[in-house]
Image (tube, rainbow, N blue to C red; front, top):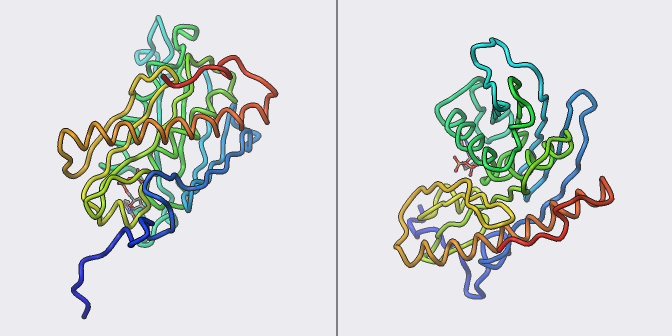
Length: 246
Ligand code: UDP
């Protein structure tokens, strides 16, 4: 039996999937893929495959859940049972409830809910195939699905994870790096640099956190560019097209 610890970065500085430490996986985006949803987006990111669908704004029932001054955002993250190596037990879990909650909060500062009092905006993100980074992939897809639904956003939300393997910071962890590495830090950022999601699993020093934030900001910028291009392809132009992440 081989008891050598896993090596994540080779002598050329390349990772197990051939990427540099600051390189994100290839991302492919398709907006408006579901005819019955008000807005939708299919997103592939490395081996992740995600579909996000938006329904609403529509009247919220039961009425006691309504907000008279704003729409309520309901975000549901779900992993299909066939999306992971071991079959995923259907139905909500602690993990999916947590991801749904933090993802919903990632959108609260940008969705202009004040235009739709007493309503609900339902966002469903279904993971069809998972290879780490699914919560961030789902946020990237959901942003585009919300825009596809015609819901005004103050900004795009772009999300990516950063982490640590072999003592080095790496951008956009794959499953092996996520599951066996030293740290995983998913982040979502708006175009003006506001952080709307920040979680951390594992250990990083204060200095490493500062460096990780720079690295992940750069990753989010690359993703924002992909989101913009997808929007331009679908709609020709949109208002935020010239705004940069600070
Ligand atoms: N994973 C899995 N089964 C689970 C949860 C996670 O196989 O019940 C895998 C899956 O590939 C997932 C990765 O582990 O993408 C990392 O999971 P994590 O909880 O860190 O969330 P994510 O990085 O996907 O947002």
